[in-house]
Length: 498
Ligand code: GUN
Ligand code: FE
Image (cartoon, rainbow, N blue to C red; front, side, top):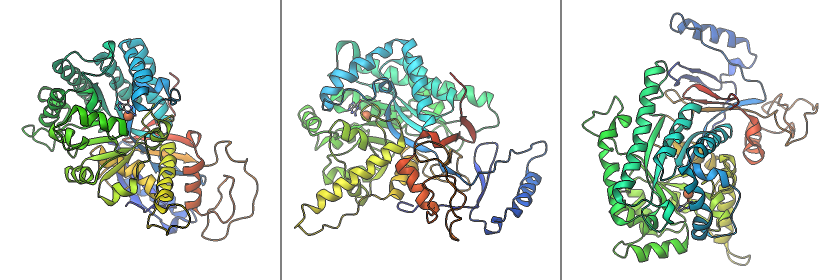
């Protein structure tokens, strides 16, 4: 639950061949002396289907498993220019950095290299699920879909739609042309799904990569394009519906496609939207009127929203992807996540590469904590003013946003982003003994009873609890400690050299 962090030492988990957690026994006290492990394993082996011998992994005392991270908003083509151009505000940055660099993805060789790099980088950083924006180019988007499949990530992939206010070489000439590229990208996901389900009979990878309807943001789209995309999302994309049909859903009832876009990122953008869409009540209403605001919608940023908009987003069951690193880098604003949560809005976390300068969800979490503390300081005002009741986000809450919050946003509220029976095994193995960001292990006296034991990680002060060590990792860790990554039970990190 939001605000609760469950840490289970001495636990035993069984993952089945389809990549689901079949059994999860936590805090098995009798395992403390290790004697029962052999019995437990023998019992699991006895229950395994004939002819199969499950692999058995033991975690070292310095290791733990965590649910994989979900990056609910990033731009795959922008990975190549991450860390540059932040001396500009958003709308200038789009014109000077973003559009010219995204236009380069008409070159499929460049797309191949860049998309393989971003998928590898994010997987190694612990992003088991990524919600990608691609570009306006169908061939490059297909390459992104293939890279995601090949490297084993879970993802939504969106063909960016934009038919105005962009340079000549990087704009779609008509609504029909834009919709076609989205259809082609949806079809690429469907084709990859079919290939996979035909070849990998043992794993449930169907639906691992899904298409996503992606109007860039309101100023880049005519109202006609927004409406066409809203229709496409509602009908499930008719001819390409196959890729979203799960066995439980009769094909006569198309599942609404995922949708993503940007919302209320800067004040300048909001003023521009108001002038472009005078008939709409506000920015959120532009999307609502086009049929783009629903339970499958992920809205990037959502910084400067009126109370009415929060109510509309909540009522629609849409999700906000909070992108704090980007909001700081481009100076877009400080999103008050506590306010969103109090309004009952579902919140996930995004790196917004390249608006954000880091592809690591760990960095997104740290920036979310900082952003929330800024909100708390501003809410309290300068010293003589009385303290306003404002609780900044906690570590437990940002971990929730990066896991379960993201899972809700991608339509996996019940089987992703945490460990429990029936969940998909998307997980990280973290080893706190790895990485020179803390001094080398030293010998220290045994910890008091009930505290962390045998961790070779320094600072390994004897009074560190397991929770202390986990918090230290969230604040100080990086991908070096992420030694293994699984998606749907399949190990995808370490990965072979490219
Ligand atoms: N708004 C429209 N396009 C973009 C983009 O590429 N990045 C960010 N951060 N905001 C946007
Ligand atoms: Fe973005």
